[in-house]
Image (cartoon, rainbow, N blue to C red; front, top):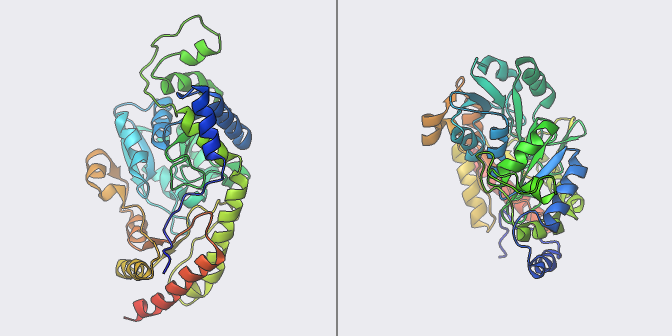
Length: 382
């Protein structure tokens, strides 16, 4: 039986020729021609004032936190249901992650709980757009404006997704994208910082390039460059950018195909949900998702684990997702929860992600759905 893996990176066919071109040009470090193409594409596509390619989304998050002025003693509100990089970026700056519960429907930060979590130490909000489905950004931006807070969008999963026709990552002061192997558009490892406040551009360039004003020097604005700020080496290599450019050129087609796979799951699993065997994802009308993740929420952890095991027996890769950060060793040491976070704890224990990748066929989807249908009833009646 042929295996259906949980993830399989999509190749457009242009990656190797682009990488060869980059290698032959002998410009292998950051900020070469391919980097420029990627940056300009992201700016034109999202409407951000500037896009800066980075070596990871983690790097972009760290830059976003620095640009927001987070210092020792400051607090940043975020969901606990996220990857550790979201919280670690704050901790590295000396700040404290404050974990707030998520919504039952979208699994995003519950905007209705944010104001209650604010203190005089709160400096920023870090919404995470789970599965490429937008948080309720209008309300979060209203809160941020009323209390003078920065908004750092963790849009790691959000390329080509939008909220009320605005691309994810382009709404807060800064946004952070991921091009990791598991993402819709990939260069293996990589990310981007979207800068939506033009006043942050010059500082962002310095932070990304080891704390130097090298970008100004390369543009001919100064006659030499020097160390002006504490930064780090956040640039992506030109080889990564060359690979990414082949993907960005086909980003629309990639997204369209992933949404087709997502829709096929959603339609074929409707009976499973109607029978009360599992809950399907929910996408609000104001959101355009990108088909990044398709998941089911099972009735309890035992049934979730059993489903994953039975799918594995059928050579189908399925997996759970985030363990709540507020329950982790580091989360308890460096952060704190606001409230009990009951939705976070119950959903994280029941969620199973199904295989979803660009080159999945209708037959692949049908096989996964058949395996779920065969497994779900015995699981729930055991």
